[in-house]
Amino acid sequence: MQTIFNTIKTIALKIDHAIKTEDLGYSSTENASGEEQLKLDVKSDYIVEQAFMDVSLVKALVSEEKEEVLPINEHGVYTVCYDPLDGSSLADVNLSVGSIFGIYEGEPKGENLVASAYVVYGPRIELVTASKKGKPLHYRAQGEEFNLIGEVSLGQKGKLNAPGGTQQNWSAAHKKFIDSLFAEGYRLRYSGGMVPDLHQILLKGGGLFSYPGTSDKPEGKLRQLFEVMPFAFIYEQAGGQAIDNNGTRLLELVPKHLHDTSPCFFGSNYEIEALKKTYGAKA
Ligand code: AHG
Ligand code: MN
Ligand code: MN
Image (cartoon, rainbow, N blue to C red; front, side):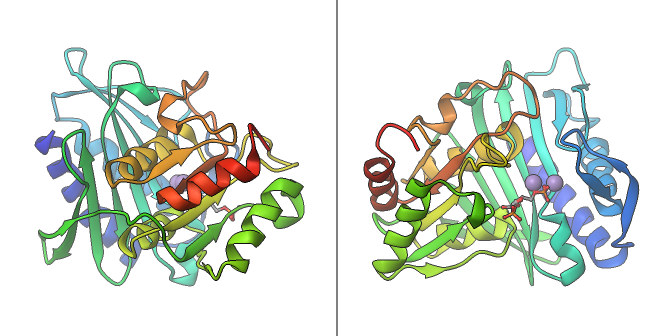
């Protein structure tokens, strides 16, 4: 697994360089979810693909930016599902963006996720990795080196509330729940990039990030294999919880298609338990 994490460090340095030096405009193509691709999305995807090409442990790659599975090595063990540049539409306003990696042993589904990692491209490059043993680890790059800052651990209750999705399209139950957190004193923190938003909640000890099903997107926006499950793994390893709108652990989901999405809620225990009560069995 360390080989894969080391490859992610190399990728992080290259994508960071691309963000800082390359054209921020749109390409003429769409991704598998029908979203217009930025040139940076395409370039970042290429960087990840090239970096994993020679890693013999990797059987296949599945990218947010590609329709199909890319086979790498038939004797490989892991399928790496990744979002090469998350929040890419924030790059032209100079906000933080990220990369997300889920490492699956066998068929890509929640229960086969054995490790995950994400990179934040902000004022500094930071990396969080998690495997089945122990708390997630937080690194910060200094030059080409990634220095370990420490373990990531969520408290029982936080102070931050990051509610995603268009409010006009929220259900009444969801609106009531989000309002109840603000009424308790929670503060709004939402940049529009799930990597920096979830990173902030993790490092500040807790809170809630939500991206519910909405009337226009009943299955939510965030993609299970590349976005939802890798973060669910990290939140659980950090001592928090990650569930869907039915209260099911996100890591129990089995996507029917590679690009399936799911409503998702990540947080410390207090907020997720409160969510389960307000939502009841479902919202
Ligand atoms: P991507 O840039 O990979 O398409 O993903 C962006 C995602 C995620 O980072 C963020 O939380 C969410 O989209 C924001 O969506 P809204 O603008 O609908 O809140
Ligand atoms: Mn994304
Ligand atoms: Mn993306």
